[in-house]
Image 1: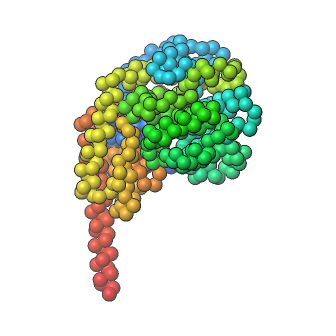
Image 2: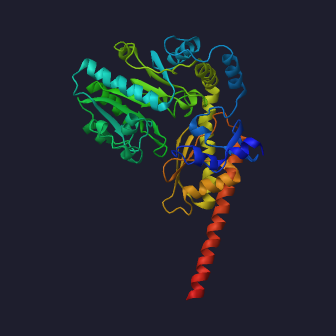
Length: 424
């Protein structure tokens, strides 16, 4: 164990960090591909992917190389200049999407904030100030700024801030409910923002018919349709963007996470119809379009945007599903497997023998890192290039953790039964 490991541990976190997070019991110090090592040298297989951020896992050699090359040229120059990597990345995003133009910032929340500001300004430019309602969906998640957390449909994140300044103009309605959107979208609506797969909300996919109806209503009332593809964008679902699978074009799209592969970057994509009314100073970001981040994103986009890899991502969803269903026959824990591509959700049964906390704890002890999405869904977001061998190994550890948990519960029940029998 290094001196650094002795000086920096979980107790250090509790002393010097604001407690907005509750980190896992170990501290990773090294990563390679889909594997992590902690301070004690224990090896883990990472099915979390930095919460769907690492399309090629940890420390990919191509990304290390471009970071090293760009670091010798230019790190940061602010938005008083543009730079070559930012322009090259913007052109690639435009060439491979519906968009005509792009704005860069540093996180998904920032991208969604910018998208919503654009929508509000667009409405005020062409209409009066009464066209200012934003429609979002229950259990959605769009970031943690005061605006985006208010727009998100999870009160556990927003209610403590008493953000009534926004709430009067934000309408949260049922996901995948066509009747609700027909009632709630009207001439006063300026924007609809939606995740095509609700990530934090339980890995729930939007219905194709629902998204098509949304587009139809937005066209009728001149409402800007915003697709939040912060988590689903850049190959995660088996297409470069998830909207391609819905055959519906948004007015604005936000993406982040996989775009930077662990480096902070996000993008807002839109059309000339919208951007033509925008002007310098209306919005901005000091670090947005950072040359280092954009250089990495260019390489990531080139690596992901090939048909063979994208088709493999879709096939791996089926492979995961088949293996999980096989494990489920033994332990009867899974109600449904959700998601697309390599964003999967395992919905636990209502009467499941195990809690999600127990499953994640035992998996971690075996050397497997999992995510949750709400209180009853295990979320998997491994690297997009994960091998079938590594999937098999990770699911072997998953099954092993369920086995140990099952026998622990069984012994507890036997003990309780014996105790009751002795008492009576």
